[in-house]
Image (cartoon, rainbow, N blue to C red):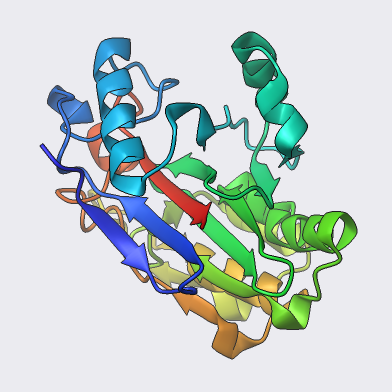
Length: 266
């Protein structure tokens, strides 16, 4: 089977994409294309799916970089020395990482999500990229801006020259949250009028519930960091509503597959 990818047209010099649920060998709630080894899928299925993805991308399997994310703001820079490390040490470097940077050709960096927001950044001047995992905690911590600052520090990237993708994630109509989550965003001084709204509860009766717009919140963060609005592509794919094509942990449970949103520098 061939992995079915959702592509983004950032530049002819890169391949940017999100995986869908189609084209792999995983079963059940992991069906069928899951490349994440941290979510409970059978490792032999993950390995086969990863090999399929690498073949399609035209890269060596050792050049597929998938961090183990922990909803923090730690960054890993993948340079040539990274690939000289033994596999165990490479995995240790990727432990607890939610943003990956590279300027290495024929290398795929990416992040795994299943309702959280994946962000890709590309610097066409320095031919460098970042992949960022922005769950609601990472969004509160402004991890998108952390990624922009890291690219400026490591590669000399000018935010005004960056191009960005905000990939599949849970949309504002579907992301119902408790008051404590809404308060966390308010305490972090986000414009709550722009990123939140009250809706009738999605299940059962009761008082209206807060919904948050993680797409818009992250888009505004990137703009505030200096990326032009016209250079930010919003996929507008709601994983909750499109869970037949994209993994959604809220729909399928946490023991399910993950979308992999990645970028390859050609």
